Amino acid sequence: MIADLEAKISGLKNRIESKKRKDSPVLKKWKRVQKTLGAFAQLSMDHERADVANSVGAFIAGTNRLVDEMPKAPKKPRVQEEPQKVDLLES
Image (cartoon, one colour):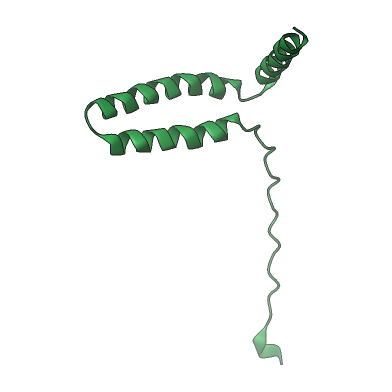
């Protein structure tokens, strides 16, 4: 019973955290895209195109990992220094 309550609390914390994410529209849209791609992969299997289905499955798995990661802060742009000019004729 306590384990069930702890699992519910953990689930609620994850849900709150996911709502706070700045990229939550991406997460919501990804669920729809994933469902559509899954249906396409199944259609591919039904028509004996396992190669296409495997490619779609790999794409879904790879993208799913990227979407689940927390976004990193953007890097600060590097300022390029002016290269020092060397006059070869002044020797």
